[in-house]
Length: 606
Image 1 (tube, helix red, strand yellow):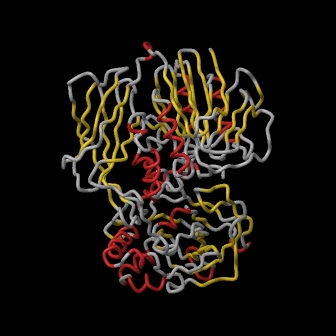
Image 2 (cartoon, rainbow, N blue to C red):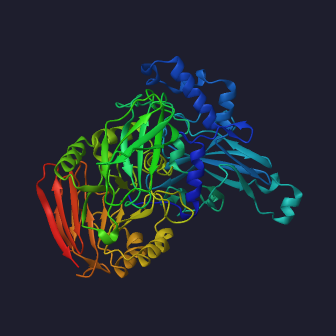
Image 3 (cartoon, rainbow, N blue to C red):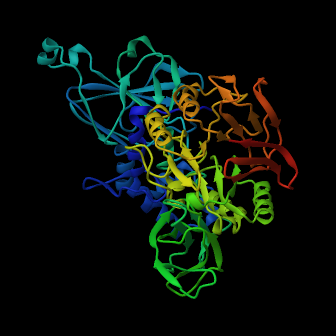
């Protein structure tokens, strides 16, 4: 699936996190209870009163009996609110495949009409109700996680229901959002989209009587807000009092700084890093920033502490040892890292890149092989889809379990893929777990698109899963125009050139800049096979062009649909990794499988 989003509504998506899960909760709307606060309380009560086996068998009837009348009222009225300046007819378009009708819909006076709308995936039935001037309050999509959530249209009531003033003035309907505070309001018609995290999915059929009504689009992630049926999960690797999941990243100059991140249970209220240059007795200590990270539906580890410490004023080209500990004196094993050399003193470095890993045990074998056989690896790159479901912390627990100690001594630098940034809710957990530079495009959340310089190489890490591609064009131009790096790399999840699905937006917005400023390689994933193109310029083979790479860390494989003449190497089996060795003006590149067999290689000299 292509990255699809509504440019002007990106901030709406993040505003909706305030009513979601995973620790980003908004306890109240003004001075009133919200859906989020009610669901937090309901889940807490369920955890206290029911065993896991009973949680797994919850159904609609039990939930409705379990809720208080006050909780039902909130869930019936505070999921979606707006005000109108005249009497209106509100239409709710509900996916016909959703098994259970939202409990509040008929009870609140909505009536099913003999009308339907369609797109290429879903057919929607229409429920309507008349509202007077004032506030319109609507309820949850349901207790299931039905992703084609309902959307809304609003129209003035018929002429005989309007006031004389409205009839004579032809007053235009004005709708003011209340919650969510930001809304995308469009016009209902064939060709309109309904989910602003998927603006390529457009309506094919709209009843003629409804064309021209105000359309309120939504995001599929709102299905998660009241999710209780088959909702609860467990992690095979819960947090404990002992610090673990140690991972390093860069969010500053790799020659003089590094970031250490780890987790523990909530027992340890303070975390520290103890570090020292090897062959030196000078021990330094720094206190970490602590955040409580919540996954509301994670039955056996709902809350954990996440610690982040920034080590600064480090010496270039120096090996440091370190460990982390909590306030109870529990500590990790010793690990180590080496800072980058100053660009002027660079003696060369190497790094390893992974494509999609998707919680695959085979990738665990792959990274362990790479970690053991290439100990000089300075850092790891990842082009997205680190996990299967980026909103589930148990998926991240599995990812860190498979990676073992590798990221504790060689930093992980990644961009989110569409699995890490799901359902229009953004890459929220990715951001909480991995600290990256806040030097991306203005107006967007930090640490998703960013750049970093390592010795004589520039790395452009670009998020095309949740940040609009055109909105990053000027940022990309500025980064390239201001860089004197010998080597330039771009990492993005979706492959601009491939043999499965075109990405014309990336090609049109970014590729001319990559060609103009001499970017050497673009590293992507998404489609589960390995591919290397010949150098391309303006879509044609050109020795002065850009080489496009695509790789896959998971075992899953996918064949190319249309074989392209510009592809010089293809491997359709997974569990791969790629090693880059840079020495001044020379680059050696090798692709391996998880047992170290060489699958592809090339050398570039400048």
